[in-house]
Image (cartoon, rainbow over all chains, first blue to last red; front, top):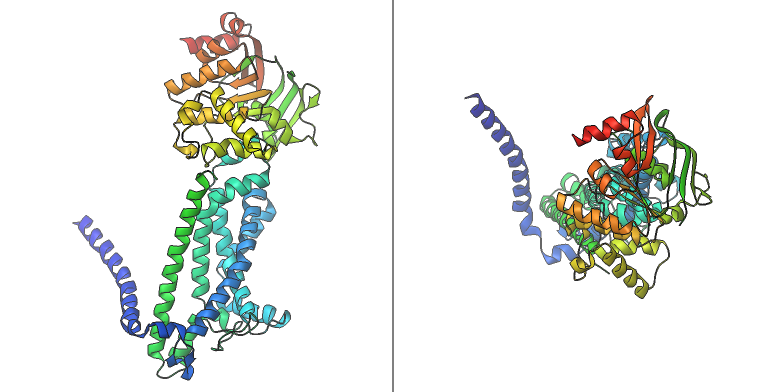
Length: 276
Length: 254
């Protein structure tokens, strides 16, 4: 009897959690599907986004993500290598790890204010894609670093000892054995980071701005998908349909990024096994 | 071939000694087996000889290890060239997650061997040396992880031999293998004996008796591993001088 009750509760919880997600998804698909067309993706927004499409928004979003990943990947992998291979037990390593954990929990609006103060004002980048991308980079770094570090740590110690016993330098061991072994971890961090970045609104409000015309350079202001949704649903009467369409595009993009990342990770690992 | 000799060698992990005051000469071109109960510092001793202890935080070796004229414990020693001269085989086969070919080529390239013809020559020669060539020659491009445990261990031997070491350190090379593979690897070790100096840690006394020329017995005394007896295999097994050795080899026999 009590087993059955427990099972019922567990199932009910599982179904309601999944149900909420499915409802949300269904709602967006239901309202947004009719919006999406080739024209919607390739034309500029008109009439504050009520009419027209998303082209400039998509370009701005892509550029912001590109800046974010270009800045955070090398920094993230470098720091993860430092933490996992060169300062595993040290005081310094523990300090860095602790600060990263704190940073990972900082609300995005704080990153937004920091980005505004540092990148936009101190470094003089103003409201720009560059400033927004770099702010997002700061935000995703903790996730990226910790996931990559976990990946490196999970590489068996036998690789390190075996390579050292053969007189292989630490750098080459890292490049040829440990980092490839950490690729799945790195990919997890990358996807989580990208997911967080593409879903971010508050931090971008203060840094990349919300001008909806086509950006002409990285120093131009640009409006990300999330900000477009926010603006359409809060500030633009009659913008709901476009907001739904944009939300659906955002979700599809997330799915696409996830599957692409896993596909690339898989292929990369397979290729390393095969002879040159 | 150069003689390997330790004098008063002690290894500490932080303050705790793993083994203390070990003086041992390894005759070139012979197989010396190191036996003794678990935790008496046998593997730690082996790890000192190619400076693998450098990788263990807090480990410090004192005393002296000489390979010919070279002082291995010298702080500014070029460990890369040392490890080329002193190869090592681990208890658990540890091929890299690369193809069979790359497992051999990766360390060779690291040591400056680049030519295709030269690499192919060494590949075939060492794989033949460990009796693996006929088993893998048609699938050099497939993953080393697809080999059986015994094959993996022989690949590790080939990988070490490819660098043409003078000395091979064997850390229980058969203990993780099934009896059949273990036999194959044991035969390989006997074949290698003529051309290399071998130093093997083993828990298998029967095996030590079959293949070792010299046996060194480690024992924990006063909180640290110590070398309590060393001599020709026949003498250590038939007429041990130390009562602890006698109890150990007899206990294992019964």
